[in-house]
Length: 251
Ligand code: SAH
Image (spheres, rainbow, N blue to C red):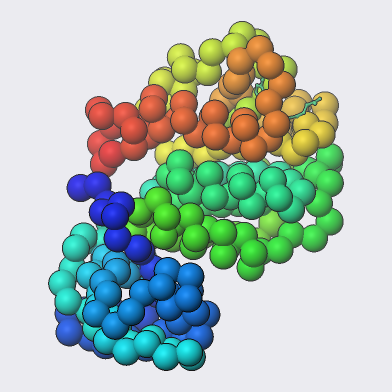
């Protein structure tokens, strides 16, 4: 069932069940009262990634807190998506955008990957996680994708999960159309890998292409920015082998 896009959605860490009253802190209080200008009696949807989504009513509103009373469950909890999204960190603005788009496009886990040409020294994981929560609230999903600690590319590949294919966006891959390659992978556990602004090194490219579980794909005749490549690849994956694809189980 599609999410209700009219009502405001809020991610809360608390356990959620009928009749429960939840106190939320200053940060949310400011947002609901001053940004959304909500008042007592106003309703919103809350979710915590475990107990489904609930219709909640504001029963008290102060500067430092908001009290919510939960009424009924609007959507039952669904399992987290399985799609693993591996990406080389980008500069601040772009990475915020890319992380939000990955969540909207249905990834289940975000795995930052440090490659030879990665130009970002320090990755703000907390900021990425905040972007993920914001995107989850906006796009109507019920679980919040995890953001793992960064891993070096060779370490990631050395520990790669048995049975999972890795779709690797390779700007030197032959041809332009990724669809035939991705369609072949429908029904399999999938990962996606997008490189940094500076691209993969020749050594990395060679290492990736030598792995049997890696499926290099082209993304058309133009060089895309990494954040563009991410959205383009995710659209193809979801349409040909993921939860946009009507005939894949569990879609
Ligand atoms: N090497 C490029 C920059 C890389 S773009 C240059 O020389 O400017 C960043 C990443 O996006 C790449 O590592 C690749 O994963 C992906 N990408 C960009 N364009 C692509 C294309 N046409 N086909 C496949 N992947 C692409």
